[in-house]
Image (cartoon, rainbow, N blue to C red; front, side, top):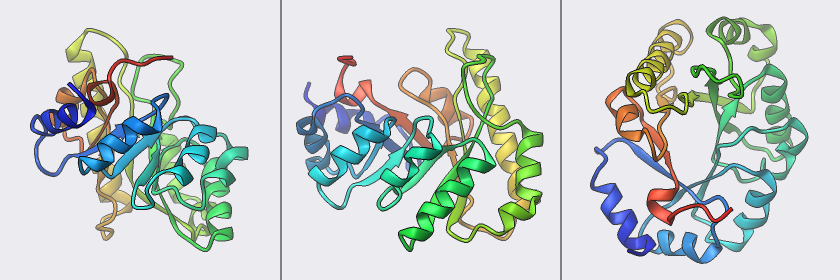
Length: 222
């Protein structure tokens, strides 16, 4: 099946209210355009250089999400157009995003990334670190970012109960933060969790946004 058929078939498997971020990394523009022509508008990239090069070549109504680990010195390359940054994992990064957003006279929506997996290689806040961030005066001074929710990646394992436990933990963190810091903010509503291998469990545990590549664009080429 082609991208259009893959996309249409996949969308039938997810409930209304769950947003699909089509992960286009390493794929040629032609395949992204096929998905766009089929109605997809939300795309994710995990490398700044790829996103900065790709965005100007493709339709202007695409909403680009940055889903990878973001280095502070590269924020400036995507600050003018990125629709959502999924992986905010430090106050320093958040301050840089705020600085570059101000330069571009815009507010950039962001998600706080939490370390919910057992793998040390994953990035993200602990719950205590997030509380310290959100209680800090530095955070209160940031006018050009908006926290829209949370993001996390489960351990890469065949143990579905472990994956479920980690996703459930992220939803608990989201609910706690909502109550403690964002009770009056309707914009704090996103739980970004779930990829091609575990999205069904993520949805069952409350995901509002899933990041899917291979099920739409086919196997990775690199």
